[in-house]
Picture 1 (tube, rainbow, N blue to C red):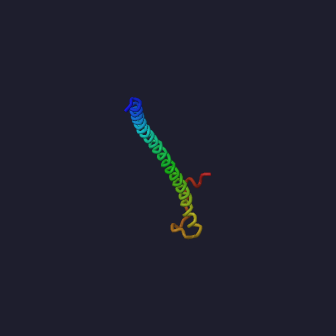
Picture 2: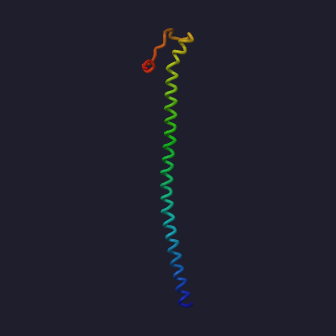
Picture 3: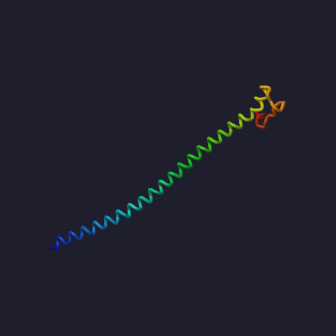
Length: 96
């Protein structure tokens, strides 16, 4: 082999090896970074879902409490109040 051919082959092998090593190092760093970003994004989405459920549960609790306060009044108005007396209003129902 001539010196020019040996130099070309050696340079190509060294350059190819360098590119392969850099590719693997950069690919690993980028995958790790993307995994961290995706983990963070997933955590934010889970927090949003929990927030929506907490808001819905709070709204349901307020609605159920509001309607439950009027159950005894409804029974009294129908004349089927098992206590036989007028309904006692809760403290928040009498506040204007």
